[in-house]
Amino acid sequence: MKKSWFGSGFLLLSLSIVLLLSGCSSKGDAAASEGTTGDKPVTLKIKIADINTNTTFRVAVNKGIFAKHGIDAEIVNFGTPAEGVNALFIKQVDVAFGADFPVLNAVAKGDYSIIASAGLATDAAAAAWKLFVSDDIQQPEDLKGKNLSFMRGTFLPYLWDEYLKENHIALDDVTLTGQGAFDEAYIALKQGDVDAAWFSGSALSDKLNALEGVHELTDMSKTTVRLGMGIVSSNDFVKQNPEGIANFLAAVNEASTYAQANPDEVADIMFKEVKQPKENTLKDLPTNPWIVGFTQAAYDSLASQKKYMVDTGIIAKDFDLGSKLSLEPLKQALPEAVTYEK
Image (cartoon, rainbow, N blue to C red; front, side, top):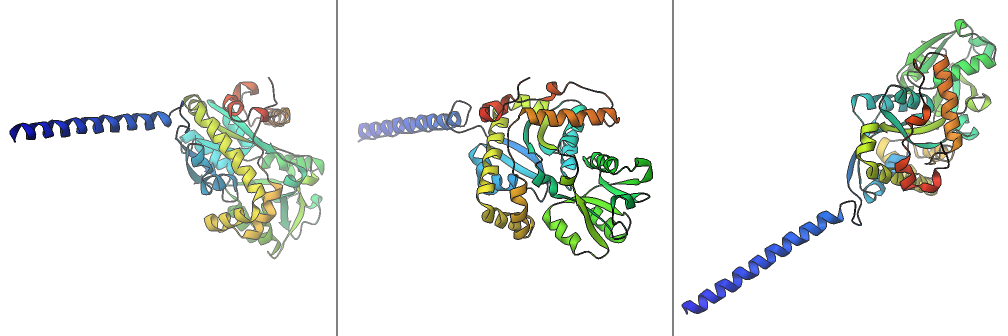
C-alpha cells in the first residue's frame, strides 16, 4: 500500500509539473501574439483631441475599429480643433487635428510633426463656413467700424484678412475680438457684443438662422480661402510608437470610409454620444469627408498658409516645412495615399 501511494503521488506531481509548464508556454505564446511579430497589433493607448461635431474618431471607437487595429483610444473634447492642438503642448493629448493654421502653429513651436493630411477644403466644405452678421450689416462695406469675432488659434484671422481685402476694407477699420469657442461667439453675437462671426456646422447654422436680428451674409466658398486639414503629434510620441501610429492612421482611414458609407448609423452614434440632431449629422457628413493621406496639394496648402503666417509675424521664425513631416508611419499604413515626394 505504501509503495502504491508513493507511485500515485509521484504520478500526480508529474502531471502537475506538465500542466504548469503547459500554462507557462501558453502565456508566453499569447504575449508573443500581441507583439510586433504576431498576428495582433500592439495595443497603444492614445489620447485624441476631438470636437463634438467630428464623426471620425467616435465611429472608430463605437464600431471597434480602433480596437481592431490595436488602439486603446481616449477621446478628449475641446471647443475647437485649435484648442485640441494647443493641448499637445501640455501633454494633455497625444494626437490632434486641425486646419493648416493651428497645425503649423504647433510644428513651428518645436518638437511636433504632421503625420498625415485629413483632406483639403473643397468648395462644398468651404460653403459650410458661414458668416453671420447683425441685421444692420447688409453688405460687406457695412462691416467698417464693427466688432468682428474670431476663434483664437484658428485660421479665422486669415479668413477675415482675406475677406476684408477682397472687399477693400482695411484691418484698421474694424475691431477683431478673440473668443474661445463657437458657443461663446454665438452668445456674443446674440447679445450684440460682436457684430459678425464665422461659424461651421449645420446645427449652429440652424440656431443662427432662427435667431432674431441676425442673418447670413456670405460663406467661405465665395472667398479665395481654401485650407487643408492635418493630423499632428509630438516627435517623441511618433518615434516611440511608429507601428502604433501606423495602426492609428489605418483605423482613422477605415472609420472615415465607414462613416461616409453608413450615414444613418453614424447619425445615431452622434445623437447617442453628443446629442447632435440626426438631421445635422446627415447634412454635414457629405461635405466633410476625411481623406487620410498626404499629397502635393496638401503640402502646397500648408506652404501657402505658412508664408502668410511668417509674413504677418504670427510665426516668429521661419522653418523648413519638409522637416516637420513624419510620414513613414502613414507610408506603412496607406502607401498608395502618400503621393508627395520631397
